[in-house]
Length: 239
Image 1 (cartoon, rainbow, N blue to C red):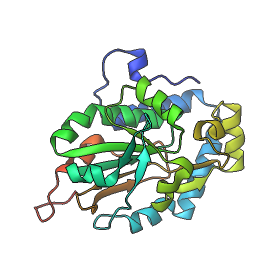
Image 2 (image 1 turned 90 degrees about the vertical axis):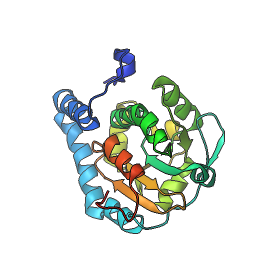
Image 3 (image 1 turned 30 degrees about the vertical axis):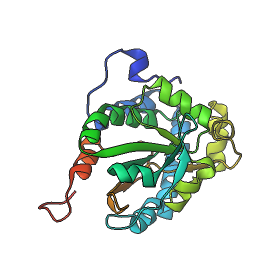
Image 4 (image 1 turned 180 degrees about the vertical axis):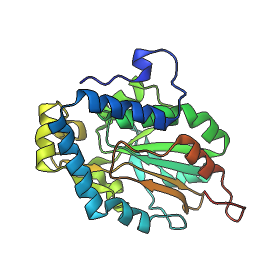
């Protein structure tokens, strides 16, 4: 199945809530993807949930905890450091699987649409994936993203956040049959991926907002992330 971005199929930006777009893609999966294939993905998600991967990551890197620092190349090979970004303001850090994932694409396009408001609120956005620099460049260029895509070779940063898992063998076989060549896309034969996750950090690296989910079809709304960027500790209410 060839997934196309909204930019590919329509010149106008899709301004619907991300949840609505993701629901539409879930419905397309339910309609067009064979039930046996869907079952493989569901078993993978259930297995990861049983391991408590997201819960463990959020326990260690929840609000009030300190984020690991990083220096990673972006889609153009330029080194981007968390210290440099945080010196300018707050930081939104997104972990995604890759350009082959339609749900990652939907999230990246939605976050790109919200990038202006997030920048106006004093924060930068970067997305991190294990895909190679060439694949990151293709994704950034194809979807006209308004923020850098960073290359986390061998998932070293994602591993620090506790987000990494090895794709089960039955899912590896499925990906191979559907032309999702992870060893090629990621430049290694580990078959490892991060679960999708989002962190908002204050300028001192303190985490203000965190979200992680083993279900790759679920992502936080950009408006929720914007609220976290604008949040002032000590003020009324919570993020």
